[in-house]
Length: 476
Image 1 (cartoon, rainbow, N blue to C red):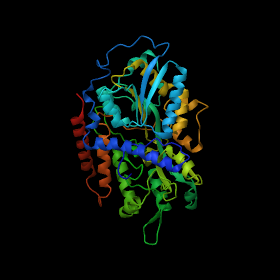
Image 2: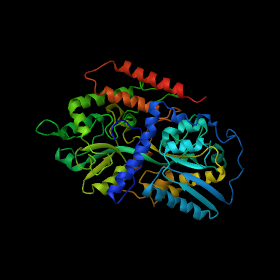
Image 3: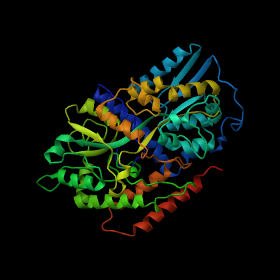
């Protein structure tokens, strides 16, 4: 699982840790496979570029003036979930069918994004599709692989204000809303209370400088000088250490309004890079490399944080479920991830990403497909049931107000992060995750370079690489 990755998985709460670990690995491999394809050439992201926009006629066919008073027919739902998670999805689908007894939903579980792309391009029977990657939104909206939902939303008076602002931003592209959010992931700081108390630290760090100082104080060494317990691992590429996940700490932005890279000009990125590299150097890059290389799989029961090998870690809300199952005796806390010392007003936010759903181009029953998609993404009871079952954060405000939403004290941190106005995401792009991968790959190499170099010049090269790829892969 080493190396840079763009997104992490929706992690279920399994009673059987072995089953949980394998299921999560399968889902995670599916997600990173999409990122890898985007990194090579962006070709897979553009496999549907000849589809046109919207429906078969370009998405201009007017819809009925009113939603059907009675739903009938068959609709297909494609999603990537498997095993226990697929059962959670099926339970919500069963509720939809119960409320609409003349409707049959044909569910296709375990369909990763590559299978989905190919199925839509081939004209297969795909009505509603759920993807694990917000990175497809730019291409799917622009190419028409997912239909424009504007007419349905306007007609049915769907209140988009119910969507969390950050979530709303990653489900549309260039003025086209072709997707709706199906739960989200939020990132924050996990800290081992016992280890912090032993080091005389009473509260979790709120700034990057405090995180570094606490981490160095918490780090212990073996007799040979190698790291025994690490306060915090700043090595880029370690577990969830990725540029996107750090960006909210300084408010760093990825792209301008024209889709051009801001990596080289947004001062927030330079601040993060200089902090991370200096932090790693203080501990010792060689020591960090060896420590990281010896780490167990992130999603195994030997996870570094769960066994006390690291005292603090950047991770997503799903880790709360893992802690309950795999490390129930660990006394830990959660908090927003620290911010730069000059950005303390941003504290409370974090990185958000999530699953998205859309109506596929060529849907045989788009009206029924919309009814199902709307139910999965805007019905409060359905969203709460999905959130409780999949252990991810809801994406509509009414779900947070529901008494049925299961609220764990540690999970509550991530519910707040998801709603914080300072939370950020990665913007949709026709080039998918290409810009993130290019920057992440560069950063991983840069952190190993001894001394300092002309960082501005280096980042200018990254900008040029990202912009050239975006221009090459743009859809006319």
